[in-house]
Image 1: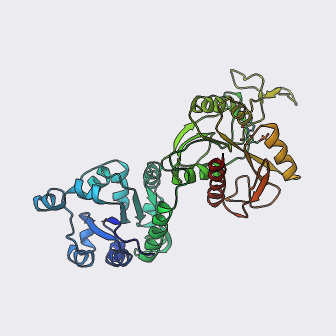
Image 2: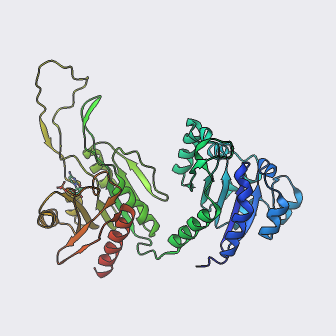
Image 3: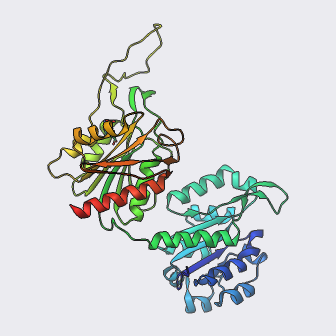
Length: 402
Ligand code: C5P
């Protein structure tokens, strides 16, 4: 598929992989993209502006203080012109400058001035890549919504072996085509407000201990990411998980079931869809000790009380959103799921058989079956992002019929 007329601002920073940049420009143009190139100072040691000008068909710019460049297409015009910014290779130094929000050359200035998505193809020595400073910088950028393509692992120009090889131009073009196709896909949830819970909850025993479970939050975060991609305005109430916030999603972090309920009820007015995906602890300790509990006897007893049921509470509101729950079962999946659907007063429930290896809790894949009052649908086995897409499409269809 030709992606005619997408405007790509291609940034090139200083690294040996920059020699592949002219091929990347050609491949992107073969797909119909308009490519304008911005070099950092370091990049010019590896690739010449002249060759990039020849393959891109546009003047190549590198100097923010060049009056000729600024009068033609300056940094703000470039930033506005771009549909996406791709930086390949992205060196450790460039990654650090972007993470710090610096604007000390044309490329970093354009990145600060643009509203277009920024994608990095990192390339550097494996030790530099693995250094905690670089890892922290990459994590900061990801949290801000920057997309990372690569790096690959393997032989490096410096003779070492490890992670830090830039993706090949063909792999970058393939990823870009997929990325663009995803963004131009239909948005069946455009303008809808969707609230969901994800991850486990923690129920404190004392200031240092808690009861919890193994929920990774992956399914809920995949739902949040996919709903945002489908055009929804997403609020994600998340228990303690180690996952980055998906692009375009508003996240509220909580710990206990009570805090999760409070956050959900505060965010609920005006929501059109609610999905309870969190593995909420069913019970919490009756008393939370003020100080660390000391070991004394061979046995100790902890008295627990029931937590509020967040999903059932939402479903019982007079003006409630389309309400969807999850059921993780090890046997009699349909019977238990349907029972939950009725008992909690839901519009739809997504059930998974957690006795099957490789799906459900903590896994990357899932195989959901959806049940509603007068029907059901199996989503087959796939990764959680695909399951999320299929579930959200079903929700959109049901809402359209309401
Ligand atoms: O009753 P059970 O915990 O099996 O139900 C699972 C569904 O209910 C999930 O959607 C989960 O997010 C939700 N739930 C809840 N609050 C609870 C317990 C479960 O929202 N206290």
